[in-house]
Image 1 (tube, helix red, strand yellow):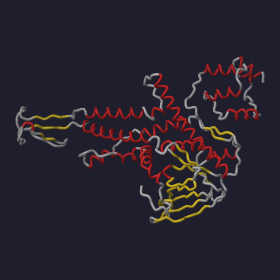
Image 2 (tube, rainbow, N blue to C red; image 1 turned 120 degrees about the vertical axis):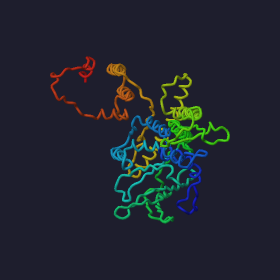
Image 3 (spheres, rainbow, N blue to C red; image 1 turned 90 degrees about the vertical axis):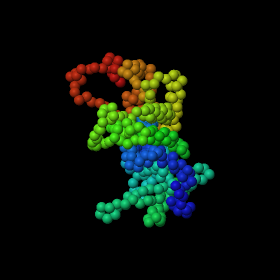
Image 4 (cartoon, rainbow, N blue to C red; image 1 turned 45 degrees about the horizontal axis):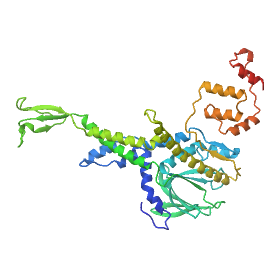
Length: 463
């Protein structure tokens, strides 16, 4: 990327330029086959038409998307637990980015974090301040420039946005816009026209800081190596597909003594098309016709190479995000793989939780809501389901009825068995104490069979 003049709002930070290639490659592979097609290379002596046709027909095993979805699925297999917030904040969480609730928004943030290595959350309000504040998730590629102070706090951030503007009755066009967050809390908005930029709007705010949170894993996207392997895999698959297309169509070959050849006339060859005709001159011994198929080990070697590439991927990042129950492993292998998986996912979950809570604090500040110290969002760290069968649940219930478990432990166990979804156990206990709802049966008790066992009936009668 070419840097612009330092007094131009479009100036790109050197660190952005340094890692732009890795970001682009990883993001292109994640986005799918169409954006990955640009990384198909042309073979030596391959015709242009053949190359164009091969690129048009490539297929993609998207290991980047598979790994990202696996990580996100492990983290958000349970909803975010929010505790200590009032009804106003809970309403804000319902449409935290004006479209999605907090859980869906956090999944989007986590996805971008895994793909890009960094993601940013900006908090904003409308110009009149009449509506609730909201969050905006910015991809790493949108933050093109920044400055920080000695405390590693942002003092300037430039965000590149692309807006759609209506023109005429039916037309529309795209405009480059640059949102500049400044240290004093104000925001300058520049727009681009005819290759030049101009100050479009200045927004003055009541806060004196930049309402933006950076969530970071690494400078180089964590799945960059997997992206490179995926591109290699896609190229190999494309070449193999081309060879298989050639092998699937036998080639008609004719030997004829009437063909002039300085070396051996009987070995001269005609290659003809499916719609071409030919005439034999001579006896069977003098001329012949056969359908020949391509032979050799090239395709086998390609398939072996593809298997090696897939093994490199699945024993790398993918191993940490998927369960492989088909391979017999030693106890040591299973231990290291489980530890690696837990560590990688925990790092991601902790980063998202920390960043999300920082963003929530700013969100509350913009809404003039004072949060207590205990108010926070908790990201799931339980990445594996605990299966509870009917016998174990029955045993848990009986121990609880006999006084061997507290209500808090009982509810927590049911939650871990995923039989109930209550979020915070402590909040549930408060709800139980304040709940005055009494269930009234719709039919007479004598008209139906009572299937409860004696212990359950006895426990209910003691209330």
